[in-house]
Amino acid sequence: MDGAFFKTLFVDHMHETASIVLFSIGFTTLLLNKNLIKKIIGFSMMDNAIYLFLASYGYIEGRFSPIYRDGNTDSGLYVNPLPAGLVLTGIVVSVSVTAILLALTVRLYRRYHTLNIDEISEIVRREGK
Amino acid sequence: MRLGTVAILVILLPLMLSSVTAALRPKKARALMLSVNVLCLLMSAYLLIQVLRQNAAFTVSMGEIGAPFGNELFVSKTEAVVLVGFDLIMLLSLLSGGRKIVHDISINRISLYYTVCSLLLAAMNALVLTNDIFTGYVFLEISTIAAGALIFAGSKRGALMASMRYMIMNLLGSGLFLFGLSILYSLTGELLFSGILQKVSEVAAQGKYTGALFVGLTLISLGLAMKSALFPFHTWLPNAYSLSTPASSSLLSSLVSKAYIFLYIKIIARGVGLSVFRESGANDVLLLYAVLAIVMGSVDAIQQHNVRRMISYSSVAQIGYIFLAVSFATRQGLAAAVFQIFAHSAAKAMLFPAVDRLVEVSGGNENFRDLRGSGYRAPVAGLAFAVGAFSIEGTPPLGGFSAKVFVASAAYAVGSWRMYVALGALAISTVLNIVYFLRTVVTVYRKSDRQPNAFFHQKVNAFRAFLCAFIALNLFMGVGAGSIMQLINGGINIW
Image (cartoon, rainbow over all chains, first blue to last red):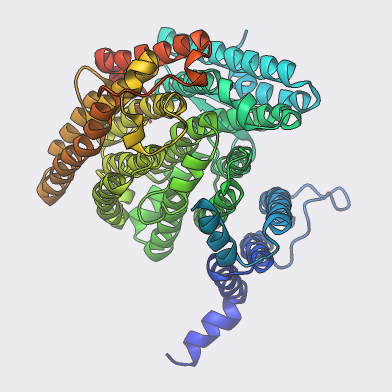
């Protein structure tokens, strides 16, 4: 691993590297963290990392956002609007999922008075006996 | 009416009416939801008839914008027949589980329950019909939300927690799927399956970006495997299925996870292409996990004393069969997988309400020993349980038998070590299935001196009729297996 490797990784492909690192952090938090609120934060981070990935591919340096500029219809002047559209749709989806997760957390907290997922499982198991 | 309008209405009608359902009183909400479901069933039957009559597949563009920016629906024989099957099973599950919805869910939430069912119906139909991978993702999330709500709707202890676990595992899966999709999109610049197929084969032919393609494909496979509870990602499944109300269990086990697998089949066959899938080696990994799922799911099921948990674990094994057939990466394998989806959905969606009734007349305990003699106390439910159990075991002339034959012959056509592994797993799991299902069926039909309880005298004629419809469906799956398979093949061969 020489300097060129790190240059490719951290300079040329900065956005991809950043989004993969963020995705991994979010994924691990959602999977392993015991605190429900932190899990939800991890979920948001994971999804936002993917949006960063998509958005960074949608941006081409030197091109304009896809809104007519001085009546110029040359498509080479503008970026593709599709990735931005995907990111917007994705954000809407993850907001609604976050909302339902938070609602579930509130109900769980009211019932079991803790946010620790292991403790809740333990209480559920003890109730079952 | 134009075919395109019908295909769009199948998705839009339940989606739009779901918000109306929420504002209605429980009885009206139920009536509206069921009529929407019947309408969707009729429309999908119309689609099937049209596709058969014209012997062609249709691509429906949404709006005036064409590819690559526009959104498309795609209807071939396979999609049409899967749509009919899903809508029919959804309707029967809601009808036969409806008796307990009133009982399990508080009165002011029943309308919301039907709202969620309506959303689920829309998401299911969209997942079957869509020709666009990102639309697939959006409806995947809608069905995840709907399924999560279906689980915690029940008043049973622990259902909230089961729902939370379900959501967490599913969101992890969605995240991986979305990342895989983004990588595929950044490689191909296409979201429609036809465009992806063309670009991926160009890229693969040049031998470029094989690493990125492999990562994308793996993430998509992993994500959807997690969402459809392939072993070892099945930990959320038993609680989610066994703690919710019977209608929810039926819907979750027979439709939600199956729709994800159908989307996966479409991505493999119509998006990535079977040859790329085969060369990536992802199919062999899938084969390994499928075999593990088949064996471990059955072993887990044997260890259960709670009959609903036992049925839930048997789902793990059955999902293994489906993924096994997919992992052959041949058209024959995919067709077998689709048929197995059908056979299993029809049997599982019947088992949950039937078991619920058997438990009811046996004093409410879900331990299978307590079911002794329940087959005499609730004859139709007992028969339905026996039929479902025999179908999943693979007894002719039921659907499960034909499904196993199709999977085995697909395995035989693949040859090499994969054939031996697959056939071995099939053989082992059939023996294991017989152990736990026969044990329960025999218990259900043993004489006991239990006195009939209050539930025994309940009027359940409508429920019996719905179970009989389910039994007929399972028989039809076995007897008409050839013609159903012809329909499935008719679509898959032109994909």
